[in-house]
Length: 130
Image 1 (cartoon, rainbow, N blue to C red):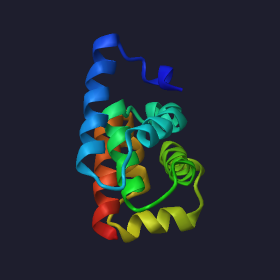
Image 2 (image 1 turned 90 degrees about the vertical axis):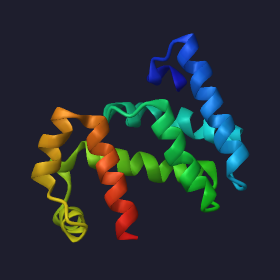
Image 3 (image 1 turned 180 degrees about the vertical axis):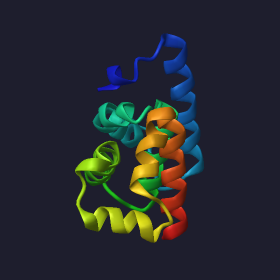
Image 4 (image 1 turned 120 degrees about the horizontal axis):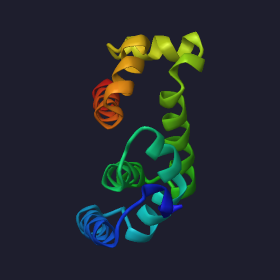
């Protein structure tokens, strides 16, 4: 739920403004779908130290690809959970990281130091590998 973000009233207003901005600027993205996805992914996103604005930006990216909120939320949660549990992933996952120039051990250490910055780095690398 949105409670996982632990936002103050003022922070909720700022997040609402950002969601409205994404709704206005992205033709396939609707505010209600972003809110739906935040509700579905905030728990796993908060484990990585991600705030509502980062989760809403990621959600809008998936929605802009024409994915239904339910499908996109499942994909995002799966990604968040895999990234949060790098040690528990199989070699295929670790090889995929290597193919993008990332090392699982380094990412694990980096996540401990700055989870949000680490997650931004990973998402940036994912974007470059596509």
